[in-house]
Length: 244
Ligand SMILES: C[S@@+](CC[C@H](N)C(=O)[O-])C[C@H]1O[C@@H](n2cnc3c(N)ncnc32)[C@H](O)[C@@H]1O
Image 1 (tube, rainbow, N blue to C red):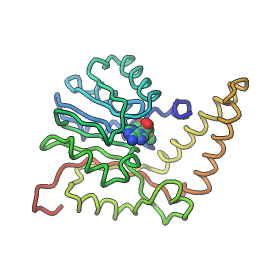
Image 2 (cartoon, rainbow, N blue to C red):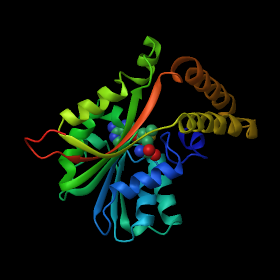
Image 3 (cartoon, helix red, strand yellow):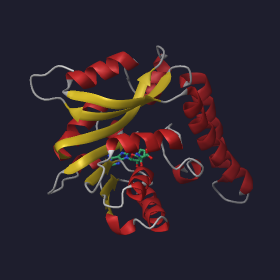
């Protein structure tokens, strides 16, 4: 279902192609280096990173066999497969003998229990002077109890950034997803799923997929569209004893 829902939006987060390119440009080393993606999904961030940096090597971690098969196919299609290693396991259990110059994690903070635990995990993998690129939700407006139960307990934008800074990180760039990006992502996911169901009426999963697309679209429009925002940050460690 997730693969079908993301057919038109391979980045499984509410960011458009220009935003992804700009964030990668800010986060990636100019030449060479190693990048890790915790919760890489279909590998789209890594494949785009490898395509724009021929000297870069990448590793992706995800629990989903289907998502990793997509990452494998996408990397082969774009001629970067030999520079990509994929690990099917829990991101929180991943260990590596060598640190990484960049650690990415977009839309996967729930796996670690939130934004700060995700940053703590990223830090364990980060080489000195390295960068973290992270994307997670925040509340644009006070959420309903139902929205909190559905998406998790975020903070507002300013509080979210304050917490990251207090945790010892300095934002060197960032992006707040626009209304257009947020809406495009939801329309694309639930529209693709609904269209697949309409195109495959004989498939045993067709009616389930159509029902799910409708439920998710209603939840978005009725429960969280007004409240949910998405923040992407490019971070470096703040030197000890220095405020940012
Ligand atoms: C919203 S998707 C984001 C994928 C990718 N980062 C992107 O932006 O395109 C979240 C991903 O986290 C993965 N995930 C969830 N729990 C995980 C865990 N404990 N360890 C590793 N991956 C996990 C899911 O399988 C899914 O691929």
